[in-house]
Image 1 (spheres, rainbow, N blue to C red):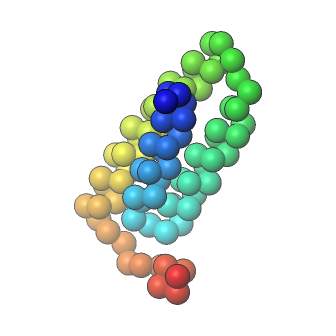
Image 2 (cartoon, rainbow, N blue to C red):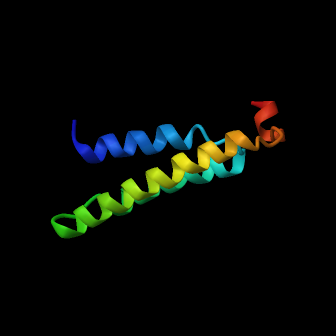
Image 3 (cartoon, rainbow, N blue to C red):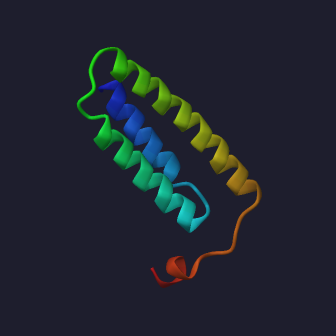
Amino acid sequence: MNPSISLFRSLLREAKKVDNYNFRLYAIRRVKLGFQINRNLAGNEADLAFREGQENLDILRRQVVLGSLYPSAKSVMENSA
């Protein structure tokens, strides 16, 4: 599998684990937007964007762990869904 597709799927998977509703939707939206913006990159720019994506994945993983340590109350939007 293409490494960038694997990174995309990993980022989405981690974003869906975020506890807070607003942060979760922001993370999912940001992942999709980031990959749309960087879709046509090549060479060094693509490598740089890929490394930035890996760093963002690490940040997102840490955020998921912190969110699980301090869970928030469910949003009204989550209760109605």
